[in-house]
Amino acid sequence: MRFYLPKLALAALQPPQDRLLSKLGGCPWGFPQHLWPACADCGSPMSMVAQLEHSPPAIDLGRCGAVLHLFSCADLLCPSYGNPCGCAAVVLQHQEIGNTLTAPPPDEHADPVINGELRITGWQASEDAVRADQAALFYEDRSYMELPETIATPFDFAPQWDTKAGGVPYWGGNGVTLDPVHIPCPPFEFLLQIHETVYVDGTPPEPDVIGCDVSTYQRVGAETRWEHRTPAQMSAQGSPASQMSIVHQKGSESFGVDFVNFGSDGTGYVFINREADPPEVRWFWSR
Image (cartoon, rainbow, N blue to C red; front, side, top):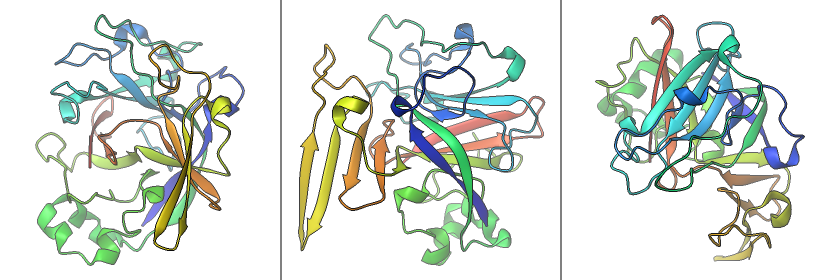
């Protein structure tokens, strides 16, 4: 089936944002602060995971001018962390979007968590080995487990393929984690998925340039050798100012960016009901 991979760029290396752009992490552009979702359990403002414009065929939000916002609770001690109730989606129209970045509302418990920011500069079409008639088998655990491994895991759990739009969901090692009561398919359809580690072409910048830890490794025989570099500029809490970190295999043509914490190696799965008016989006993350 056809799917679309995002082309990503570190926001810190791009010009300052001056208009609405599709992106992962950071602060949303023009989001009305009074609509900012708070966690029902801990009461803290959720952290933005993505702001995505309607841009078919990759991101089809059901209507021209729609903008999708994904939020999640970032408090690791909150009961909602890692549960569907700790994830929120807000779809707005262009005319509801303002003309500057929106900071998270103040949190009386702690400083709001702002995820690392990456800009989406385009979408690259690709194909996997899944046939259209096999798509329905990806939404029920028993039928999914009976699929050949080359179909069930087309790219063998490689995280480089786990952030994508369209096609079928690529589930993790726990199999199908979709709750059909919360997200019935149909009328909901798979829209996209976002792994906590996303990949950027090129070699990573210096830690002081990006403001986060940069780790490089190489395999020498059975040994893996690591080099960890930390930015000189640290936050008052003693950690890098950015919430993200970078991992790069020496000699590779891309590097991984951990921009959000989905419980270590987690993936967010996003579904849309285009039959609703306005279209409704629900999502969750799992490992």
